Amino acid sequence: MNTSERLKREATFHDLQADARAATFATHPERLVFRDEEYLQHESWIRPALEALGDVAGKRVLDCGCGHGMAAVVLARRGARVVGCDLSAGYLAEARQRARANEVEIEWVKADAQRVPFADGSFDRIWGNAVLHHLDMREAAREIKRLLAPGGRAIFCEPWGENPLLNLARRGLPYPGKGRTPDETPLRRCDIEVLREAFPKLKVSGYQFLAMTQRFLGRGRLSQGLQRWDRNLLARFPSLERWCRYVVVTLS
Image (cartoon, helix red, strand yellow):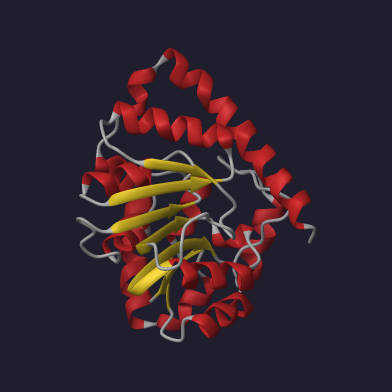
């Protein structure tokens, strides 16, 4: 993969997404204001993954691939000293607006997640949602390890690619919010092994085994019921995680 071409494709794709969203916020700036619950509840893995960061008050936290900046705002409200970095200038512009609208202080940096312009050990925590699967895993692991301070922890929420039926659906079925860059690939077990070389204590937790159907069926009582079934099934049969839609990866 040619790195400069990949970065250009990724930035262009996400800038176009941000441009499409910008028109809404230009006419309805009040929509930039949100409650923490709106972010924590929008996918079943977000709340437990964010809680796995632990108490972030006073800690240096990097929101890696910050996108629209909602996670960064939530972390800042919890007392963290947050830096949000993203490759997309368009999304960074939206994130800045969102931080101002929600009255929190966040530092924003335009950067490739594989080359973040901060010194070794700069962060106590690193957060990322749908970021790693855009990157070269070996370079990403090296950069995460470099950036984390001793005793630090990184949490990444990523699409999982070990379910062949789900992969077929991703390629062939239309559903709301579908869209991806030509270079991204859901994480596989081989990617986890690369990360494990740098972080031997790595942990992986699966989310949305049955509840992945909400992508087609929409949210409602059925979706909530399936999420409860998922929690019970995955607790009793961890091997089912292989078939989940998303995983949360903890690096420490």
